[in-house]
Every structure is written in structure tokens, then in C-alpha cells.
Image (cartoon, rainbow, N blue to C red; front, side):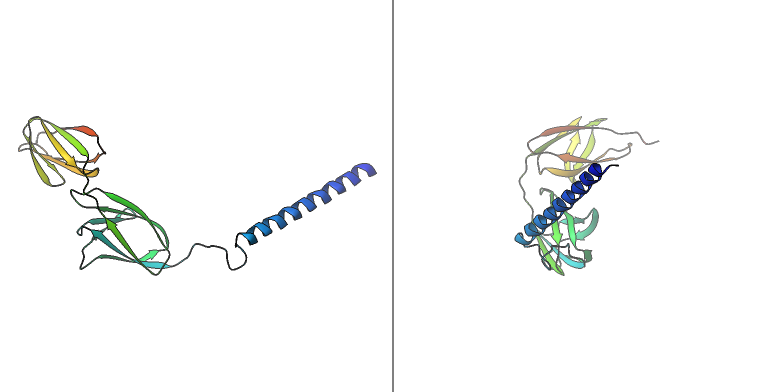
Length: 194
């Protein structure tokens, strides 16, 4: 390598060092202006929280991060201890009310979560059963015998359980979803008992 090439490489390295230094200074000035200086950096808290869950109306089933944890009552709300800080999913359901799913962030030793359920009903459902004459239940409520279908109106949108039974046949249970202002038909075929 001749002298000219080595001088050009040295100038290029110096230029890169100056640009890197300038970029670092700009970054530090931006952080200081944003309030992210020492002792101001936001770090996710670590620790365990105690969560108390209330629902209005009371008696709702609570599923916390995918696990059923119990029911909410005014005199005895659901209390969960040892829950890690951070984001969690709370799913609250009560028959004839709209299923509610909330995301909550825990960052204190004790947190109260109050969930109000809505009774707005928009869904409609038809259950068609083969053979006809089977009894149809939705969320444990009897809606009549399917001959061959049963219409169920005014269901809150969200998840529901359909249960169908007929003497001499195996019972059928299916989890279904009712959507807003939507009519869906479910067809169930019962198998004869052997």
C-alpha cells in the first residue's frame, strides 16, 4: 500500500470516529431532553402483587391468564396473591351478560379491578339437531325441543355452551360464539347409544 492510500484510510477512520462521537452526543442530548437521564430510566417493576377482582353484577366467573380462578361476590371478592408485575388478561363471564375481556397492568403491591358487565343482547342462534326432538340448552337454560330446529334470540354476544340431549342417544356439548347482530345456525348430529 502506498502513502496516499494509507493517508486516505486514516482520514476515513478519523471521519467515522467523529461521526460516531457526534451521533453519541446527539443521542445523549435527546435522552436528557426527554427526561431519561440517570435515575429517570423507566424500567419494568419487579415483584408480586395482590389483585382483588369485583364484578357488577356479582357472581361472575373469572379466568385470569387462561386459568379459572373463581367467582366474584360483593362480600367475598376474588383475591389473587403472588401475581407477578406486568400485563395480565382477565376474562369475566356471567350467563345472560356480555363476556368481557380486559388487559390490566400490575405495578403495585395491591390492585383493585372493578369490571362492569353489560346486558346488551344482539346475537341470534339456531340449533338444528338430527334426529329431531332433542332437548336444547344454552348456558344451562332450556330452550325447547328441536323439531328439527330451535331459535334462540337475544343472546349476549360472546361465548356460550350448547347442550343437546335425547333419550337413547349420546348427549352433545359444544362451545359456540355469538357475534353482534349476526344469526348463525349450528347443526348437531346425535349418535345412538350402543
